[in-house]
Length: 110
Length: 115
Image (cartoon, rainbow over all chains, first blue to last red; front, side, top):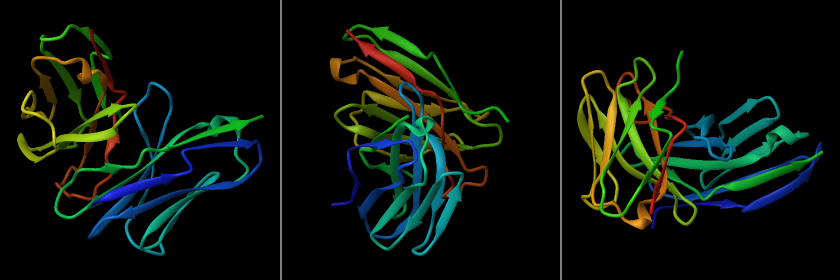
């Protein structure tokens, strides 16, 4: 079954404590993997798109990487404002629909 | 550039009623997708419209329908509301050119509560 799994479900970090979030997928014909950030009561905010294994993208304290089976979102020296739910989604096959993971709830304490 | 806008932001309805939600995509975008977000099921794809045509459809009952207008604005309709339809309904726009791996940008959502 086509599936996207994110781990951990929740993560609590101290400010400045770097970590990584994982997104593993079991789909055929991956055409794109997307990372979004979602704050409570708001729509997902786009972060990165990755298209092929080995690709990396960076933005401020975030870096996303992609392999053939999973993606990582690395957070370096996080700040409290990085607290949010981070969602991973894939597009595969012939459709344009995003299949989402269940997200990682990140809390960064000062 | 203005982002995706959705109206209304909040709705309260009772079982059996119907509801229409509206979405205005980013200027120049021609693809609009709708998603339902609930605590139990997460984000699930409803349908996608491109150039006024439904291009993809998710696994939702026929009570859920949508349409897209010539200016790319889209509406979704839910008839005969059930308690389980309470959710955040999100609209996303993408693709000025019809590509199927273009990034989807989300609106703020419409929070629907069914009593």
